[in-house]
Image (tube, rainbow, N blue to C red; front, side, top):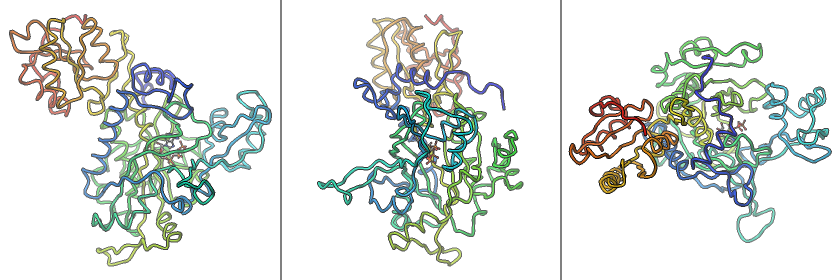
Length: 519
Ligand code: ATP
């Protein structure tokens, strides 16, 4: 791994402060003291989150022949969650302090204190570790009671009667409706195996200890795909060929068991060595890593990690997480389990519906397998792009947010050099804002205004100056290089479009000019 893969050493708390200061994300209902695990996206954050989601949908749904989307409701028949196993066992182990009654999540406490992986550990092992290592309550130093299960489902009541019969759940993931609606979607969209059903939207988990800003919230968003294949064709992925030379940083179960370092491998080598067992899993892992990279994230900060036996769900044949190197360690960004036909079988059992389908190619009636289910949290992705974009540029004396133009909340800012030029600048701004998210700023020195735009990731600034009237041109400044070019008024819109979509480099945008002092 490269020694320094971040251009910042910003902590997660500092990132939260930055996001609040600049209008990306606020603590929810702060005037009432906030509410742990809930956040509000501000003007810039909501723009950026929309951009992120739109790009995900475009890459994963509208530009693919084999994936369609749905938008299901948040509250759904409670039997869906019984069938999926969530009502029975969607729980984390919780520690309660005998003295102050503080409640914390057991596995993350062990991981933080002992720096060992504890995800998926069972109660007896956790109790043993707590005892052997004399782990105490972080708040008052008291001893812990034995761990207990805490179900993460938020409940509500539907209808006017508040009793056990009216209990329903806020969905803890978007995934299950892809199974519950499987038959209708497959028929309506006339899908043939292999195919995927995608959904994005809110999910709710009553996390015991929400922390690390957007990383672990109680209300968050997910972007998920359930990808269905013929059960006999786990190694028959028509898309994998073009990914064979793609390089992934791999940390498989044996490397973790034997205390070995993670290592870089091509998809081809990972498959040939049996490290990744199926072509489909390899394809989706590479595809998902590339989605982040294509939007400007640093590939060195990503790895794929295989679940060790203790953390694997009972139904999963194999599970890999896409992980990112956060300031607080390598953490899950996306889970990708080979779930076989577990979910469809569960829904068949509980609903008695026929969820099999006839596979034209093999002339067989099959219950499809979900060989990989890319399941991505929107808020964690948002954090990744913020961390990888953030640079405290000492030379400029301000933060520069190197956001990919696709994600940038403001694409272009229009700045009149003096108030006398406001009308001309406003005209330019009004015409550009029909096409791009655009900002007009007339206050402060030009250097200060450039700095403000750097800090919120605006890729291009347009300055209207005294020459504009004579040469019918403006100065365009590039956020990342601070280079400047002169662009004719009638070409601004087309030029910005070409820049934002990567069709031209900044140097090709206009006539280079000697950079005026940024103030
Ligand atoms: P973790 O082990 O971190 O609790 P998980 O394995 O329970 O995560 P999944 O059920 O696989 O997570 O959910 C899929 C994705 O949804 C995660 O990879 C993550 O990006 C996102 N996600 C899950 N829980 C949260 C949360 N509480 N806050 C924000 N995002 C979340």
